[in-house]
Length: 560
Image 1: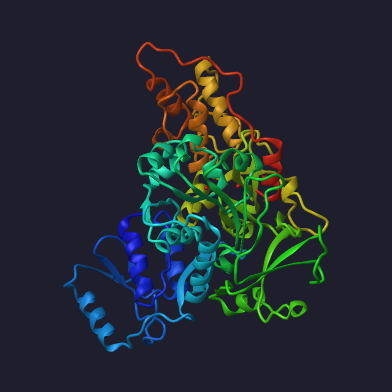
Image 2: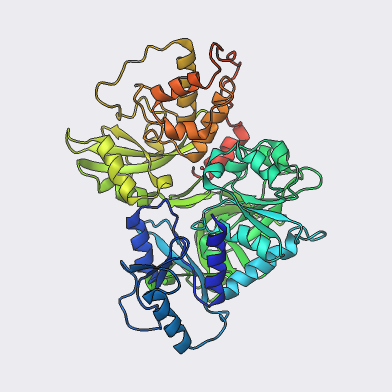
């Protein structure tokens, strides 16, 4: 993000409007869907640029969002019209029941779901966290908080308000740097960052010394491996594990890390109510496992009224008029809840919640596809990737073309590695059995025509082995593309970490610039000073995720 982005968010909240973030990397089709569903009145898209999309709800009967006319400069016609409307409109500060933001999450039907959070819930969230984090030495003007997450991801609200609630400095990190993983470490040191909210997958890539000045470290968005908690919970630093769906305003419960015992998601924030119920909706006993139900001040709402009634139904057993069924399974223990997995087929990939149904829908709409299903798989290196399994309707199925179509309709993190299967395994219910889908893959079927056969010298074969360990697919062609094989920003960072054992100056930017394995091998060779051979082959080239971490990741049903 940029300073202008965060100033815009504050300005929108100040005038009583709600902000609706869309990631700059999302395709236009998704942006239009979001703007239409949220009835966006105007779009801020860079310095001094406003696109007027139509009157906001309650301010007129216009058509709502759609392609608007872009205007620049304070003297533009649109700016003058907006100023006139503002002078004639009722002036009042935002009220507790007004919406503060609308964030879209992955939808099981293939359509993203808009979730609106009111100022009342937002304020309760900010104040509740202020009461538990660094209670003895609260954050203040001397602190610097990392802003590294996309504002389209609700965890970004935690980053922003950790700073703003305490008068601390919010420091936006360049997106390209965040994607590098390991290379973000020096940036954290140079910018004096003292508070970080992030996903465990990203934090695991940072050298421990890069967090020496960090006195508050908050994990969320996905299961936290015990080893990571043990490594980073050191004297002088508070480390917390948090849990919360977008539908309950960012965080519903939290637990401090660093002591003995399992990694917990903890106890509810002030104002939030939690219950663990069995299949009949009755409370489970101590040690029992059930679905987590959330009530209290943090409840948001769906823009879709029917979906809202379905997911925020009353819970008579607790006397709650409105409650959110999370779909998450937890173990009830008085010391704090323990996350056990998903009750449905929703997963988390790199901290981003994904409905596999949304991916299924996109895959099934591809031409020449008879059936399709998505699943999350874990590679030998512990990296989790999204895989799309396609059953071909005919011989004309082209995986390269299929990926191109998906790129035009899905955000980058939701584009899976594509592979062709003869048929999709099913359960007795007739539903696709995702656990029976083949893994690891012997090849994606995406190799381009005239692909060069693999007969590599030792140094090139070693690079290919690191690639295969990270992505979980054997390299069958020097034309294999890292991103077509399911690679993303975090897996790129993990591959760079492995390659630097022998090629210490290789960067994530090199993978983005030369995504094909043959070109990457050349880049690795050229990164060495002339006449210098690559370093010796280490005993272990890619460190697999430990068994305890694999268990936690598997419980997530999975992952930036």
